[in-house]
Length: 330
Ligand SMILES: Cc1cc2nc3c(=O)[nH]c(=O)nc-3n(C[C@H](O)[C@H](O)[C@H](O)COP(=O)(O)O)c2cc1C
Image (cartoon, rainbow, N blue to C red; front, top):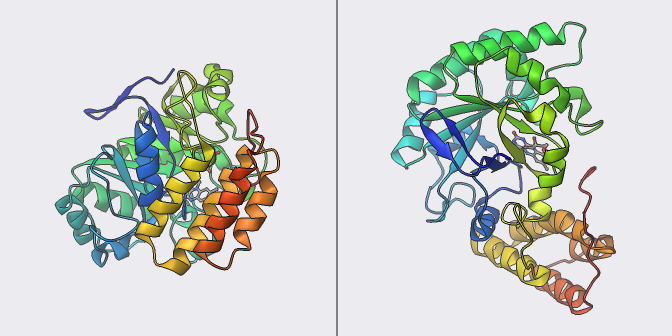
């Protein structure tokens, strides 16, 4: 399932993508994921669109792109009035092929800027932003959405926005079928995908709660109209998830953790690197029966050296792994 898809002349093989996760899908993680392979496209974490005008594409830990990262989608946190002509122009100058608009993030800081879910809700601002993005961006343009706000008329409101995206030239939509207010509670409602697909000709990428091939197969009937699947949290916990899609791969957890540590240290100043290592460890620790102790030890480490020592100590005890880690609630 989802071996390949074509979105406006661009072929993705496989059609299994890594989701944008703020604080996680930075270049250090993407390089690790790319080494494993098997992922058809990776989304950057949400990037403040205006920041693109100032960042160095060679040095920024968010924009840096490894030579092997072939399908990278730059996700933007955009606000009405952002100079999209210059922002998208700069992305084009630096060889970016695909841009995604974040219309799903419900964090207070993002909503306060009239971006993410607030932009999705504001029809006129949404029309202006998407129209402008399309005018200034010849490459692949996608949008990531949720179901909207839980209101009596949410279905009409959702359909109206889907039409707006289609009419304004978006090439595909990623649907994480939860309401904004749900955050990560309840299950992603993939049973709504056939209905969503009946409202639009746009290719739909299904996202939410997938943990690997079995969980995708279990939803096969609902996912029939989707062109691709996108996985977030489980890909952080198991960066080999996509490479192990069609059969088991040998994984040395200690080596993977160390590789991620090295990539992070290469990209970030020490204080930020320590935080990023701790954040990654939260998800990675889900692979182990007593992973919580590992996570606590690393999160209490005052320095990178101590975090590494704690990891070495943990792995030296050959910790028991879990067949299926849980990332719900992380
Ligand atoms: C820590 C964290 C950070 C996230 N950051 C972003 C983001 O920057 N942009 C975005 O569109 N979604 C973001 N998301 C949502 C994910 O992309 C995805 O839609 C969600 O986690 C459901 O997919 P999953 O169950 O496979 O993780 C984030 C989610 C988490 C848990």
